[in-house]
Image (cartoon, rainbow, N blue to C red; front, side, top):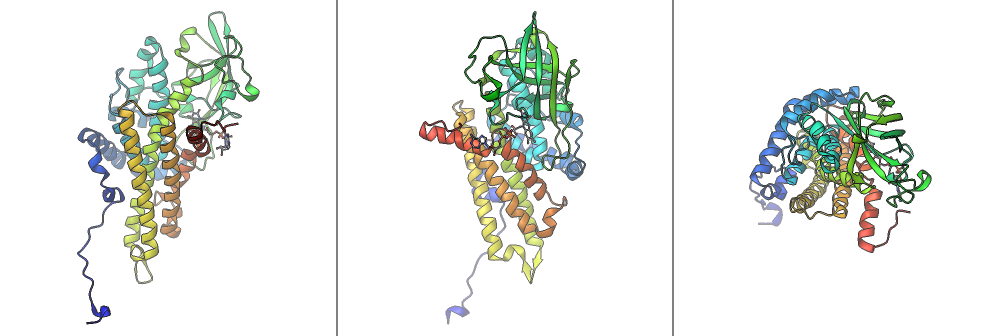
Length: 418
Ligand code: FAD
């Protein structure tokens, strides 16, 4: 018998999901898995059917969603007390993954609410501030936003121009914040401003044109405060199912009780960013997983020439490479989650995860789009919506370049930001 005559017998193979191939499920505890599955079910039943429409319109029912997400228990879910669920960091990460498998805008709503606005109040607020805001924010009755970025200062928030000056026992805030998620729908804005009267030098983080007038402090600005407005930013090509706004502060007068007493210096807002970045480590992988699973399904159905797209070697090479990156990203994310649950996760380790997940997720989304051909450019499939969203996710919470610099500093001891 010649070799050509031989049948190579291959047992029938049941297709596996990319993460099934990696067996990452075995690394997740039962309780965390149950929380994840509940969020997955919610996204699939209540959110997914509406996403293409919201994205196309560039509008979401934020208030209704916040209520539902509050009932689901995901708002501030990793915080303890004040109506928060107090789950593990792993469960929080997995929830972010499921939310972003729906849409990065949905995960952004939850991240900004829980990791930025609620975390800032939970960590740095007075007891009175916590009692006033946290239970309502956990239930989704009140929405929060977090204003750090300014038109001229994104990667370098130390240069901020927003100022807080004393007037008697009050504070008066002036300045503009830009690209603020949830801004126009928020009941309370956590606004970071540099004070003018706490001594030159301050926290030593004064940068560029903003000067070194004083320390960076956080203020709680309720919606409707005279002089405060939050116009929505329109015509976005990315994160269209999310509210993004400018915050304008014109002589906004606040009582002394509006300042977050325990946040002094830029380390306050930066610690909040670390919380949100951690969620993105998982979230971006959710978007990538959704792209890859959609594409696998499509490639099995789509006949090209005389067989399914999935049966071509070039397709399989793409699918194998993308699955490898998704699985490696998931292993890193779960490792970082274990460190966070153990209380030892360091900021530069979060940078490793944020850089890897966002960079690989956008590469996967773009590659998946090629496999869908023309169909990939429509909202019939979630792939290009995810790819477009991931442009924002790559940029916010520290751009890829900023995270490379954080990692570079950790490796070399040299600061290369300026
Ligand atoms: P820039 O800082 O101007 O950066 C421009 C380019 O320069 C980037 O490629 C950057 O990587 C690069 N760069 C920067 N520093 C260096 C360096 N040292 N060396 C080399 N290259 C460098 N902000 C908030 O405060 N709250 C929010 O809720 C919020 N939501 C957002 C939602 C969306 C949809 C988007 C798009 C942004 C949001 N942001 C928010 C703002 C976001 O955090 C900033 O856009 C981000 O920090 C980058 O700042 P920038 O856009 O000013 O870019």
